[in-house]
Length: 92
Image 1: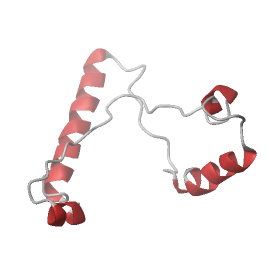
Image 2: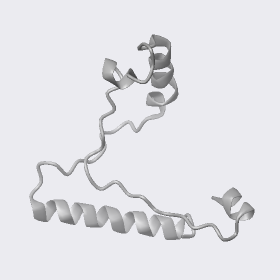
Image 3: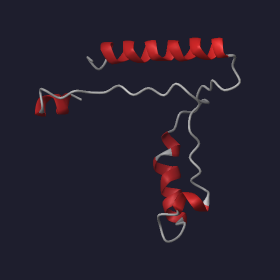
Image 4: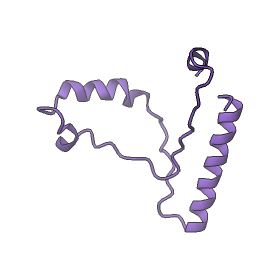
């Protein structure tokens, strides 16, 4: 962000927050590789080594299965924490 701000002082940022269940990436499914001619085992191994090996080690939070009231409270808390982080750490 510092590099962007130095290059363009007028830049505007948008804070995007995920408040629902994390998406599952079906990288082992042949349909995931539809834009390629074939499912390349080397690409899958590279994805595992470069991305999944650095992934969060504990399960990401989910809101499915919660009551509407609890879901709203969890999502509201998540949004408030994201905004606080953006202000405190990112200077937004």
